[in-house]
Structures are given as C-alpha cells and as structure tokens.
Image: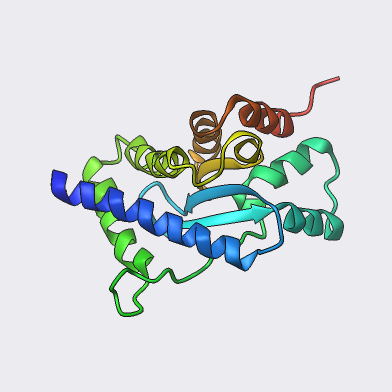
Amino acid sequence: MTAKELAALRKDLIGATRLAFDLCRQAVAGQTVYAYALIEASPFGEALQPVCHTEETNARQEGKRPSKTPAEAGFRRYCPDEWWATAVGSVPMPGGGGKDWWDDIRPRYHAACVQAGTDDLNWGFTLLTDTLAALDADGYFGTGAAREAVTLMVFVSDHPVSEEWMRESVRRLNPPKVVTRFRTATAPPKKK
C-alpha cells in the first residue's frame, strides 16, 4: 500500500465511521449511548464494522438474563461479543450511488493489514484507534461530562488479542475517569 493509498484509507475510515455512528445515533434516538466500538472478526479486518451500545439495551439484556455477579455484569456491559449492539448495516458511500462504504473499505483495510504482516498485528489496531481518536479530537463524542459518559474501544471478536485490544484501546482513547470506570467494572473478582 502506497503512502497515498494509506492516507485515503485513513480518511475513508474516519468518514465512514462518523457516518455509521451518526446512523447508530439515529437508530437509537432517545436512548443513551455509552459505548462506541470498531469491531472485527480477525486482526485483518474480517467483518470490520462500527457499533454502539446503549444503557437501555444493556438494561433490557440484564432484565432478560441477569448477570450472576458484578464482574459478569461489567464484562457483559463492556465486551462487544456480549452486546445486543446497534450496527447500522449499509453506510452510503459519498457519490457511490447507494454502494456500502464499508464494502469498499474492508478489502483495502484487509490488504493493508496483510501487507503489514502477521508479525505486526498491532498495525490494524493502531489504524483503528487513530480513527476513533481523530473523531474524538473533533469533539464528535462530546466534551467534559458528556465525553466522560461514553467509552471508546477497538475489539476483535473471538481472537487471542481480544482482551488486550479492548483494554489497551480503552486506555489510549478515553479520559482517566472512563478508564477507571471500565477497569472497575471489568476487574476479575477478588479471591477470598
């Protein structure tokens, strides 16, 4: 991937993620979004998509199948594999005549990750955290108390790097209050 192609991919990731989160917000209008994530099924971009989760959805989930412990509740609250997340599906490509922007981005992202090689799984992680950080720097997730009410993360579903990426992305992307809240909620139970 050339530097020009990489710059175009970065720009498209930011634009498509912003639009997808706009659509997520519309889909859950009147609910309180508390988490935004970029998730994928492998560190190489398989099924890459943005999702959000709301307080109301989390409460419904807990109401139907209550967690047995606070640690389980915290894990379910923050682990995208456990969410009944809002994913918007198709995100219209600018000037694309109805094409899904993610259908254009996924193969480019995958090719860039493969080019980086299996020795550098963190290449894709860095690109995705940079995407969320760029939106955050623009104030997309709010400021002050509004920003501290949401958690940003990158997650790989069912992969050995899942927990590492989730924890490290939360640390890198969020204000200290958010990181502390996340760590408290997801801490393993203390041994007696």
